[in-house]
Image 1: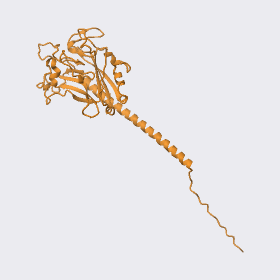
Image 2 (image 1 turned 45 degrees about the vertical axis):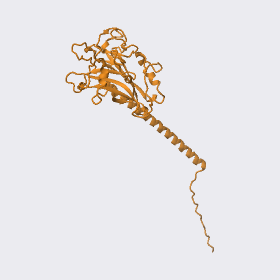
Image 3 (image 1 turned 60 degrees about the vertical axis):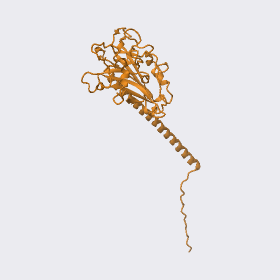
Image 4 (image 1 turned 180 degrees about the vertical axis):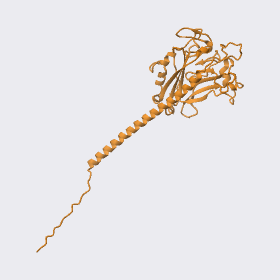
Length: 323
């Protein structure tokens, strides 16, 4: 009897494959995902940089305005070197704001007026045991030499310590500024003393208690011809609201200080100094479309600089009851 031989063949499994169309579709999806993720990362990076720059500007501005406000609040009318002399005499530095001339003889250096500057006397000496007062000032200076190809704006603090009175005279007649600045370098006060980088403009206004700019002296005349921002406490002032005359020496009820700040990344793009020009006190409050305003100054900056610029302001109230 014959045997039936059965043979079986096993079905071999073949690995799954992808068509060219499927591969191209997968690659396309992957490319889209990469582009989307890269775009998101770029936007997140830019947002982070913008927030970091904004925080940097605000931190610097807050610290500067607080420090300046503390010293400005301590403004005092100086006691004359000669007790028999009149405290209203032009020979003593009192509160000088944006003055290009003092007693028609001494000018605040033009490189300090960017566009404004403030100088005053205050009892803030560290070793003040005899009631002496120091000379203090704030102004912006541009440095075009320290970093080749880059113009750096520095907010500077002038400070003449009364403990160094042997080196200069605080009460030095109409040449107060020159006498302080021209002392020997080894003992000179740091009149261009660095306070902060990246402050490209300083604006100062003297206001009455209602916030109205004070523009005329006790005689009803401009403190300085053609200079509406000037203020000199040795001339007294006329209140613009009540028309009440405050005889010299007199300080205003309020001083408004405004600074224009850039962040460090934007500062590296500045190649030449920017000089702000403001025509009248009221223009400080006008919008960017009004010529002469602070915002118009910002609006006129190069497009690459403008996004990194911010304006900060504070009003300092003075204790005028003692004057």
